[in-house]
Amino acid sequence: MRTRLVEVVVPVHNEQRALRDSIGRLHHYLTSTFPYGFRITIADNASTDNTWQLAGELAAELPHVRAVHLDDKGRGRALRRVWSGSDADVVSYMDVDLSTDLDAFLPLVAPLLSGHSDLAIGTRLARASRVVRGPKRAFVSRTYNLLLRSLMGARFSDAQCGFKAVRTEIAQALLPAVEDEQWFFDTELLLLAERHGLRIHEVPVDWVDDPDSRVDIVQTALDDLRGLARVARRTVSGAARLPVPARVQQAQLPRGMARQLPRFAVVGVISTLAYLLLFSLLRQVTPVLVANAIALLSTAVANTAANRRFTFGVTGPQGAVRHQVEGLIAFLVGLALTSGGLALLPDGVSHGVELFAVIVANALATLVRFLLLRVWVFHPNRRTSR
Image (cartoon, rainbow, N blue to C red):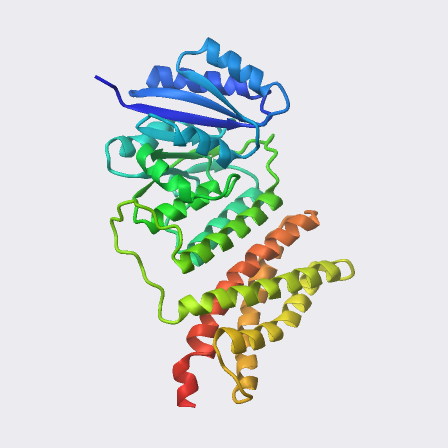
């Protein structure tokens, strides 16, 4: 009789220093404690050092270990390649540095094997989690997940923890609609799963930051924001519906929002680009908080006027002054969020980190601004009554 099988994928790129110790420790742990069948797959994506050679040696030395090579780089690409062809009951992955305590692995996959859940993620943001990491990474992670919950309505708490598992049939149903091949792959998969009413189980984990991590935080964050914008467009347009059984009724956008959101997004992108350009120029000659205030104020008036005309369809001079005055309240919210984000940064951070902080804070301010404009400044009842 076939036993239950769990496939553990370890994506690697130029990890020759950590690979042997990590795979040896993972293999020993699963062999001695894991009550189900397992397979460890080292997914080498375009390494240029000796990683692929070491992966082959480990596959020859250790039972239940195999190695797969990809010519192109990308964690999402590696996971897609292995998961899409897996014959296991559950597919999972973890980072090669094994930052997450392995004792959380059985609680991660058990609800999937029992059929209680469809996906499972490790979370570093639960009260029961014990996490050791620097303030910059903690700020970026918490801000990103707050952004997901605020803008996308996500109910999961930690999209970026490199410790996840999925029932194989679910993974193979969702993968065709997941476009990203890099770091945003996890987030896109989870958002797609929630949209189809699938059950996501969260496991508090103990996690220790890897000091040798070579992830470009700013570039990864910018890629994630672009990914969020793309997923939001597809959600509004109704694209990416898959034959996955939905267990809950899908929420409907409020009346008029499906038309307003894309227009607000276009105005917002243009305003944000103008704001970032002005902020970068002013940052060379003024303190960071002054540059932020001037750049934000300079773009706020134009943003309100553009949204008044194109997003909410208000024309003519009547009420224009009142709209600008009330729009400045949204500006003050944005100023508080961006200034607060900059104030939280440690001294001496690079301009790139400053830029990332204002992008994230500005995104949160954008959400608040849209809600204020929709339910207060340009609400149809107010316009009709006046």
